[in-house]
Amino acid sequence: MRSKVFLLVAIFGLGSFAGGCGWLDSVSTIVGMSDTATVIAKTAQIRTSYAVVAADLLEVKRGDRLDILDQTEFEKVAWYRVRAHDDAKTEGWIEAQNVITNDVLEKSKKLADQYKDQPPQASGQLRAASNLRLAPDMSPENILFKLANGSTFEIMDWKFVPKQDVSDVDDASNGEQKQSKKSKNEDIEAAKEGDDGDKLDDKYDMWYEVRLDPSVSPAPAGWVFGRQVDLKVPGEISFFQQNNRKFVTWQRLDTDSSDKVDTNAKKTPGSWVILSRTNAVKAIDGIEPDFDGILVLAFDQYDQSYYTAWRTTGDVWGLLPLKVEGQGDNKAFTVQLRGPDGKMVDKRFVVFRDKNRLKITPPEDIAQFQTKDK
Image 1 (tube, rainbow, N blue to C red):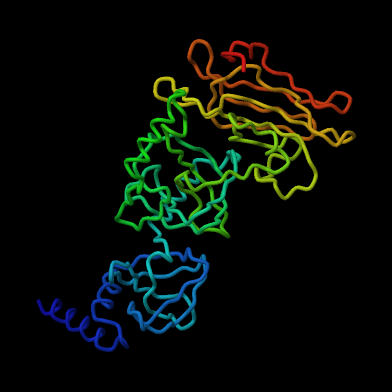
Image 2: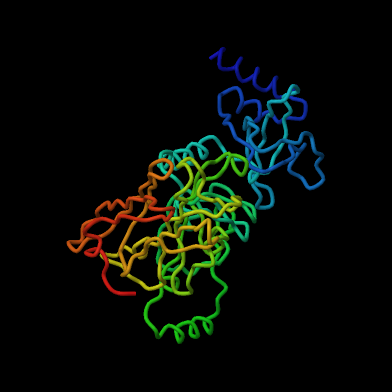
């Protein structure tokens, strides 16, 4: 009994000398209730308190580690009391949206581990600030943090989710969910325009599973709502898109496999394998194909123009990922196609050069995987 009393006295005694810290902060530290966090904002301030008139104590930068001592909510804004790892061990308050806890960070890393040996399938950029999430749904509990407008990322996978009555911009705070502002009249007008068959973007929302560069975020992966995502199709090949057929995946055939999929920065035109998708609904057993067309574009250095090295003559039903392998002129790419028996099969296309012209040797039975003329 005496030892318990002595411990309580010691705790209260330490709290009285905490230099502005409440005794509860000391308790949380002593009994091991602290957690760690990583700064996700480009810069943020540790402040004397969470009040509007509080003073700034220390500026921290993206990637800095902090110890979490306490947390609270003030005027519907979440705050953490933290200790910095500077020489002075600065303690103060930081807005929760500027950091990510270690527990949440580990969940993001597990998502990234799924794709550590897989090349990106596309690249994208946000045209409005949007939440990065642990799963492709609007549940308030799975928000990692908010990515800034203009953030770029590699797209590793995507998922078609039945259309939801939600806002076009996924910028809700943790613990809330925004509803769509679309009026009933708009819904009626949209229905009137839907007489020409089911359209993919009318029936589904797209969610992208993305991988982030450390310069953008310490959290390496998550899901992004697709309504505010622009695919960064390289300018040299974007001209070849058609109104009814959009590019969804593209990879260079004349670079090493270690190169990133976003090669807009390359000045020299090159050869590409491209997977495309029409806007028609083609679900089989409730699953939509990731792509329904394959196109190989090659660049003629002498004529300084592109030509079609190979393309599907009919629609296919395929799933990601697109894999390119090999070095130099000895390349091949592999895709998953649905066969006449309904089974998914890996199909390998060999890439070679013949008198400076890029040529493709498709699988011998490729005709069986094409369903109709385009």
